[in-house]
Each structure stands twice: as C-alpha cells, then as structure tokens.
Length: 191
Image 1 (cartoon, helix red, strand yellow):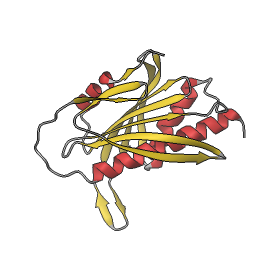
Image 2 (cartoon, rainbow, N blue to C red; image 1 turned 90 degrees about the vertical axis):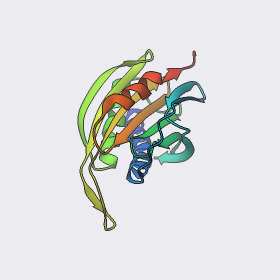
Image 3 (cartoon, one colour; image 1 turned 180 degrees about the horizontal axis):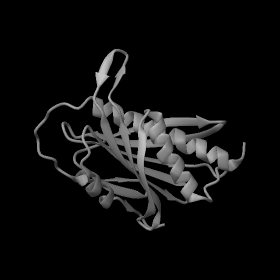
Image 4 (cartoon, rainbow, N blue to C red; image 1 turned 45 degrees about the horizontal axis):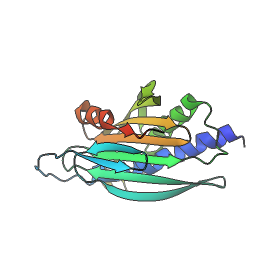
C-alpha cells in the first residue's frame, strides 16, 4: 500500500465518521420553534459559528495500522438543519501532497458512507487553503424496519498541511442559506 493510497482510504474513513454522526442527528430532528442564536465556537487552531452549542465527540479511526483521532462538533438545530464540523490530523506518513485527491476522497467517502449520491463537487480555495464543496442527495430508506425521509447534505472540506476540516449541514430539504453562513464563519488561526 502506497502512502497516497493510505491517505485516500484514511480520508474516506474520516468522512464516514462525521457523515454518519450528522445523519443520526438529522434523523432525530424534533419540531422546536426557538429562534437560532448563532455563537462562535473555538477549537484548536480554528473557530466557526454554530446556531447553538455543539456537542464534542472523538472517534479513533484505524486504517491499515494508521490511527487518526477524528474530533467532531455536532449540533442538531431542531427542526431546521444539523451541523457538523470534523477536524483530524493525518500522521506524517500519509501523503497529502495532492490536496485535490485528498479532498475528492473526502467528498466521495462522505457520499458512499451513507449510500448517497454525490451530485456536485466544486474545487476551490477557502480561508487560503485548498477546498472542495459538495452536495450529497440521500434517498428515502428503511433501516432496521424504520423509514427515513430523503435528505440533502452540503459539505465543504478544507486541507491545511496535514489537517483535514470538514463542515457539513444536513436537512430534509435543500436550503443553502445556513450552510453558506456556517462555512463563511469558519476561520483558521494564523500558522
């Protein structure tokens, strides 16, 4: 296994962690009419605004002997959208010299992890770093006898050195307004 291959598989597994957690939160949406109160939340080397206080979580992802800690901030804004922010540091032996390939792997891994269809990707630059924006359509499905409605997930993944950031917003109907606000609020600390 080459380092580049290892990087692609690691990226897909990191994407799976956040998308699965986000889908669980979307499924748990409950009608709640409180207005959104956006607040800045800081993490190590970054900050972003969420419409409430996100819950932190940590998942260890092991890929062919490479362990990566995936740090998550997840918020269900009740009746509107669910928000997720993942950040993870790749070990030095993971090849990130081709940011486009790493970011494409994150988008494809996110869609594949939930049997969704990656309907759009747009490579670009965000906060001065290589990025990719993507849209995933997830069809209605039945899981363990329970029916779930279709949903849409908008994502942006950003690669800074060996750290991957993924920001995702999921909702039963596509509405990019909160996604745009969420990703526009993302800031990196100076290196």
